[in-house]
Length: 145
Image (cartoon, rainbow, N blue to C red; front, side, top):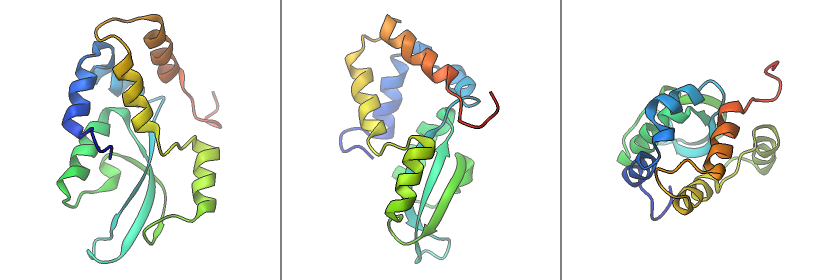
């Protein structure tokens, strides 16, 4: 989680961009995902695990809120679990595989927030149009399209 950006702050930031409404994010679910690395404890409350997930754009804020509570939640309520393992951190070869196959970027959220802070709110300029078009048209490799 970003040190200066909690889920509520992120929700407020997104609210400044009507182009990223709940409906638009729901539509993006079919074409894009947000790859995240999370860590936690198994259902036993003791055994540490890590997991790479593909979070649905429409569920990202809810996912961040669930994380912030510190309470247990089901990962698959927010997207697909791509790979998981025991321990606090994934092996470096798995991290590299996630970078190569899915474009995993551990700094994605920070970069996205900074980018949106720099764009004028409520003004669909060319940079925002290009970004939104890229998000709408993103396809995963190998999905046949």
